[in-house]
Length: 342
Ligand code: FES
Ligand SMILES: [Fe+2]
Image 1: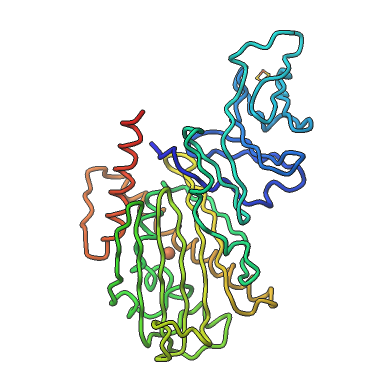
Image 2 (image 1 turned 45 degrees about the horizontal axis):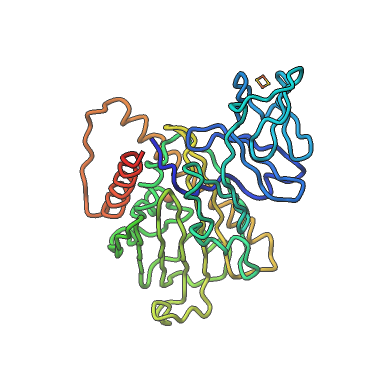
């Protein structure tokens, strides 16, 4: 069961280049996404209303798609506009069209009641397309349910243990308690660390002293969006009070979109505001982040396999779980409310 009345990230803008037809299962539904001739994204149910063949195996004809099983043709609103050998198109001959919006290099899709899709409620991730920042588009497919990944993102205590040579560094990190603020649609987590070992990935891409003041400030909100301000600054210069001179600053935009109950699309970019004219730095940061997410995947995947052996196992809540417990509760309550509303 997933939240439907939410904007989800369906893909990166560039995935629709060259008139491509992108087939992707999103929130349990097969979806076909392409760009109209005028350049706007179109999202249709990827299941022909005739006998259920994927439209993504069909062919583009202008802004229409023809199913290449028996030839039905659909327009960009999902209406069947032609049935070979049958002059009358019955009213039930259509596929669902989903509201879809392209913004700052992400394609956002609304999987619920189209009448409630308000583009103004799409979260702000403008850093993805801001000339003051640099980053590369990332994508990973996890064979893990989206809430287990959400747990991982809500709890950064794992950084020094799962990511000792990438994002983590000193275990001092896990000794400091973050400030967890409960939001109506998720959590906001703020962690400041003074005079701590410089994170390994920062050391690899920028000249920084061996110890820094470090911060991770992020929100994790429904239905699975993570936006983080993070960085490292020379010790004691007052980064916490706002002096970020000489700091290495990052913005991280990450979106979890469930594929099925046991698999998840993970879209991400780690943007930096230094070395803007050095693409090799951007590539190095991106590759370290990919390596780190594989480290997460290894641990979360292992956790899932272990948990599957004994469904009666009960987790032990600890202080470090405050953010993820709140997010799980918000998710469950929102899901229950959506289902009660029909
Ligand atoms: S299944 Fe598409 S035309 Fe028959
Ligand atoms: Fe992690």
